[in-house]
Length: 476
Image (tube, rainbow, N blue to C red; front, side, top):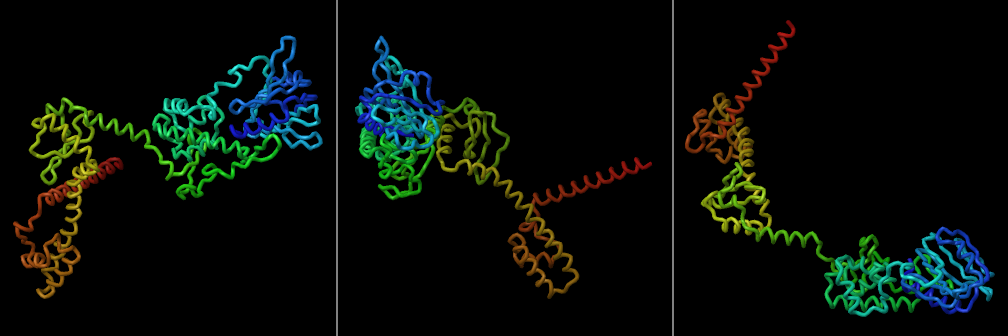
């Protein structure tokens, strides 16, 4: 879209050739972008151009007064995305998508060409009210540094969105916003209220400098823009970030990146323009500080309704969440009971545990560690029992010379049978299953597993017997 430098360049070109020229004839093509085209066809012929002005991205072509009251008339033109307003000789062939042609008294033609027809054209009779142009902000080239800082710093919006907002500054667009932010080394996603005074002064100077340089080089011709004489601009050769994704930054040689800010593609250097902290991290920091500063709940003072899951690991106790206000539990010494610890100690413990890195993982590990040990013991019981049974059965049938070879083989396969070694295996073989109670007695957990297995087998047998009886009854 033509921005302030492009519209300013077109305005200066039209100001050189239009004032004093009279419209002889008007021709229209497609008129869906024109408001009241019949009004233009009635009043534009025999009208004279008096001046050409610019308001933001709007062109104002002032015409001479008409009627008995002498009301002023203005032709309001917005170029949209691909609009072109040029003055050409009549013998030149009009390009495609030329929708308005105004033949002048000197033989030339004022032509409006628009491929996408996103532009706007309207004839305003009488005083030009601001409502005709919409709510427009101040002119960037005429805004002081103090006024610029006040407009930006008083709003909690992205700086890219603020610069694109025509109600704040009129005329700026995507190209020169990215270039100005790069020159000022400000990330496009930063909030306007977060900018320091020095950064605002630097951004104000960058905006003015970028716009002045672009006007001097007659704008940027990236797609369809040409000036009033049909010539392309030259500032696109001086772009440092816009449209240069993946290329090296002119300051630090880092790769230019592209993100979406305020619904527009934004080009920036990740090294020169540091990204701001996300709002979520700020809110999380505030919520964390308020949680740490909050006093302990009343349930802590009275002992609370502790979760029934209490696990002891290496001399420390883990208690589950006590209520909805407590969040995750933690590890507390054995000497600290539910009703004995004070409010200050509980709050102190919460602060310390929350600030530790990865405290939740340690709590979960402490809670799951006994279960994992129990599962490991159950897995190690099966090969151990099988190996011992094999040794006792074969020990009766083989000679003493072969017993040690068999014991070595079994010990190697089972890793020494839970750390017992070859001597332990030989001791069991010689005593034919009479194992020492002090060192190698079966633990209670092993006995419990055997009992559970036997009980499970009994239930399976009873179920099968019951099912068989039911089938027999049905057959009868």
